[in-house]
Length: 115
Length: 113
Image (cartoon, rainbow over all chains, first blue to last red; front, side, top):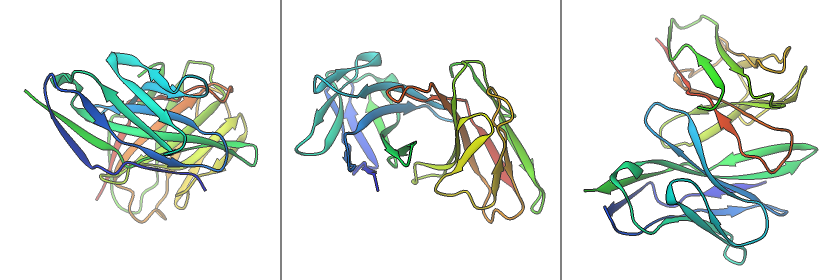
C-alpha cells in the first residue's frame, strides 16, 4: 500500500530565509507526487507535481521540489520565505490500483514564517 | 477554489440526523472525491467516483453514502451511523488523465451536537 510521511508537524523559519518542508513516500510502482497548500478554513490549492523527467520541479509562488528516487523523498523548498507563505502544506502520492487511481495525503506540515 | 462549489460553508445538525453535503463542479472533470479532514490527521478519503453512476469506497466509508447521477454533482450524505461526524469535509475533482492534479472546493465544516 502506498503511503506518505511528513515528519514535521510544524516548521518555523524567519522571513527571507530559505525553507524546506519534508516529504517521503512509499509506492510499489512509479510515483506521481504532489504538493498542495491550505490556508485556514479553505480548500487545498495545487502547488506543483512530479510525474517524470527533471528531478527539480518548479511550481506556483516561487516554490520548487526535488524528487530523489534513492531516498524516496520529495521535499518542498523556497529560496526566500514570505510571511504570506504561512499555511498548512500537504504532500500527496498517486498510485493506480485495480484500475482506480488513489491519492494518499500526508498529515500536513504547518509552516510559520516569522517576520 | 477553481470551479468547485460546496454548500453550505458551515452546517449544524443534531445527533441522529442524516445530512447531505453538496458538491458541484463546472470543470467537466470525470473524477470526483470526498475527503474528511481532522486536526493532525491530514485528509482521509471517504468515497471517490471516476465516472457517472460509478463510485468506490475510500479508507473511511462507514457511515457515509454518495451518488453520482450527473457528471457535475457528487453529494455526500453523512448518516446517523457515522459515530464522529464533526469534521471539515472537502470535495475535489480531477480530469480523467492520470497526470493531472486535483482541484478542491472550499470545504464544508459540519458540527454535530
